Length: 357
Ligand code: R1P
Image (cartoon, rainbow, N blue to C red; front, top):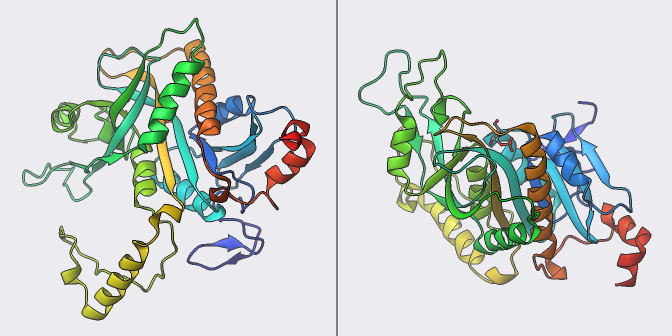
């Protein structure tokens, strides 16, 4: 770390760069495609407009942000690596750098629990989280507890989901017959191994996990590691900043029922004021919309794994489809980040096509 950081609550450098992604306002666009691998990000970046030169920032913590224009619309490609904590850094730090709406499409790989062939494109309409229960005694197997926990489902943004399906249909190369499966159900896990039911040298007590998951979640099709947290943060963001002193529910060491009756009365009054003010004028509040396209790399039923040539053609098609979905998705100008001072301001000036519009 070279820079002086201000504010321990939301750490930023003196010039406004967020701590882990390293970007600041004006370097990330409202329309974002997020991926797990650098090569996927760089492959999609090749589809951006040739002129002007794109902005690219590789942070010390391994996040890569690429911002450019696709058909003259500002878009960003953000490579976040793997897992829920990185998805959390990504959503929160990008949100902090943006004014207006945030449109996020995750383009990731996944394992498939049904008999879909590798190379299929699955679009989850909802996702659940499956996490390792760290209170379970994995060494000696506790008969009174469960080794894995399953969350309630959270939905994708229905409009962005539909736009993504249409764009993937429209951009399909004639030679590719791969299936597109919309309205699917995904589970995001906190481990590639343990909570995805893989057998390793660890005592994970997960031999029947996939059967349990399929029985508990109707329509469950894919397993991966980020979608749930992206959908969950998108759905739970309320579009305003809250004071950290506004609501302080107590910590608990046992399961709790969320209820305001458990909050001291003065805090309850503050919470009620805060929530009622949030309910006004919801239409003008910025939103986070999230959707996902998941490329089936592994079939957990046949044990097949996709080959490198198929990955190349699938990423090319789906990358193009996601860029089309994002760029065509209607966002009114007042819901977009200001052009002034952004990296796409210079793009506008140096792009004669855009200047004429
Ligand atoms: C595991 O191999 C990784 O691949 C999947 C999982 O969600 C996890 O991040 O996604 P990406 O291909 O986008 O990284």
